[in-house]
Amino acid sequence: EAGVVQSPRYKIIEKKQPVAFWCNPISGHNTLYWYLQNLGQGPELLIRYENEEAVDDSQLPKDRFSAERLKGVDSTLKIQPAELGDSAVYLCASSLVLSGNTGELFFGEGSRLTVL
Amino acid sequence: TQLLEQSPQFLSIQEGENLTVYCNSSSVFSSLQWYRQEPGEGPVLLVTVVTGGEVKKLKRLTFQFGDARKDSSLHITAAQPGDTGLYLCGASSGGSNYKLTFGKGTLLTVNP
Image (cartoon, rainbow over all chains, first blue to last red; front, side, top):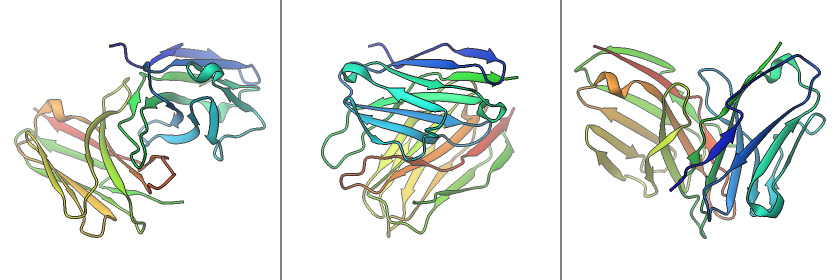
């Protein structure tokens, strides 16, 4: 079974440029998460989808970040314009959430962003 | 917002030693998960604990969930270099909230 697939693995851009990350979750998983992880730190939730609905985007900096999950499958995370402080690893995860159970999160390998 | 505190933040030990890392909060959780993350990879689930006082063993790893479901510990016996990685605890308050919040992690290095 294929795992969570993310692309690109690495991206280097100059500040003020746009960037987009793509995530293909595990087939059948109803919940998709985007996390931001700084070096040596734990992941911080940016946005959580249940099917195609964004149910928690309270930590997403909406002035420059946007996300979508069309048809409740693949998802994209966009930053425009990027700032130096956005340099981090962007992790996508998916899970099968059943009633009363968060379930196991399956993570992709992440997209490492460097903003120069 | 529940806050998960992990300690120690860094731990460097020799192969064969035992160690314990901790995950604490003032909040009560419906479930708590431990993940291990290796460099350049995403976190991978080790265990989920849901019952206060629960103890789970995974080979040389022993996980305990506090009686009040506010804290957890991970004990590794006879650590090996392959145990090196970032150990993360993540917790959910349950109900209709399936948000998993992570601590900052414990970075473990096991030297041969």
